Amino acid sequence: MSISRRGFLGSAIAASVGTGLNARGLNAQDKVKDDVPRPANPFGAGKRPIIICANNGVNYLDDAFAFLKNGGDTLDAALRVVKGPEDDPNDDSVGLGGLPNEEGVVELDACCMHGPTRRAGSVGGVRNIKNVSLVSKAVMEHTGHVMLVSEGAERFAVAVGFPRENLLTERSRKIWLLWKEYHSTDDWWGPGLADPQWKPPSPATSPQSEPQSDLWEQRIQRLEEHAARLGIEPEFRMAAIRRVLSPPTGTIHCSALNDKGEISGCTTTSGLAFKLPGRCGDSPIIGAGCYTDQDVGSAGATGSGEENIKVAGAHTIIENMRRGMPPLEAGLDALKRIVRNYNNDMSKLKFIDMTYYVLRKDGAYAGVSLWEGYSSTRAHKIAVHDGAKRSEVTVALFKGSSHEFPPFPVAMPKELTEDSVYVK
Ligand code: GLY
Image (cartoon, rainbow, N blue to C red; front, side, top):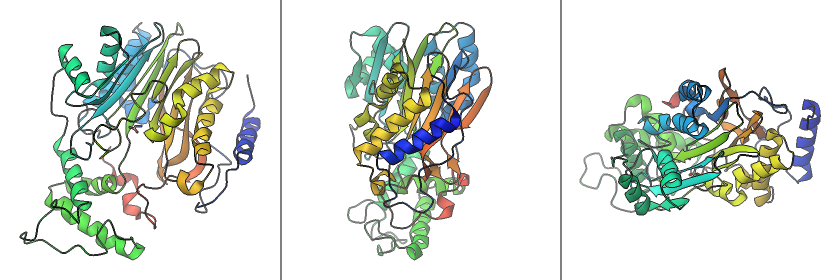
């Protein structure tokens, strides 16, 4: 199964070229990667026990790893990791404080798979319950079903003891309001005529207008004024504006493997910010947001949920590994299926982003992404703990960063793409 680094890179790039990848619609820097930072062990067997997760779980790995090493169940270890961001009101990608749907209501999705007993649980579109990852486990343990959604899932959660609480933090509510007002030049949201600060919407600041690079300054200034009026803290304003202009799909996945070779995984999210009510992404879909097979390994996803559902990403990766592909190649192949779904059209692919987290039963792992990061400074990362905790840059199929969607004809200004604008 082993393959040299040079040999693999050559074949990966050749495969990309062979599938017709081209530079249509790409900027000069957006070329298929010819060199990549590598995980420590992309091809050989890894260590056990081991936990891998999206990088927003890195602060919770020590506790979960100690639990796993002391004989804790693999699914419970993975759930310990994702519960951290679910409980954190400042992580606006999952659980409490997650960015809401277009009506300002937080709706959460999650699923889990327990390898040793080959069981699964899932919940979608759940309101008012913070730890939906644990609710998905409860569905697995306390029902004969696999998936519950919406009001039924909420009622089930309450019945088995989860408290109802308001998940919309002040910060997330204000970002939603900023989004709402920014997109409302032709309805009653935002300050009305009678407001002393009212200004007629100008072509420069209307989201419906074609943005020009020299109009960005006015547009962002208008957004900053809105943000200040809404009481968004000065140090968080640019981060809030970024979320309004480019709604994120934050999520966390975690897979855990113990020294006996038992393996489990889970994924949880608040989904795409400002989505239509009722929209479920990939995270609660067994086989898309997460898939675990005790015979093979576990995989999960963060990123464009709609795209991942169409390639059943996590299941595809596990089946690739079952057929002998190493984790890195298995993950890259799933990314290439997304590329194939768009007939390799880079003018569309540049608006998609996807990261897969792959863990094989022997401890080998990989993190792969469609693009290197969201911006030049924000590379996609996988967090790992196998006795040593670390974050590693994922292996990207394409060089450069994905573009914001909805699309802008001109690049987003630097102050909106730098790390410093992010609180988390
Ligand atoms: N991957 C998270 C979502 O699209 O909802």
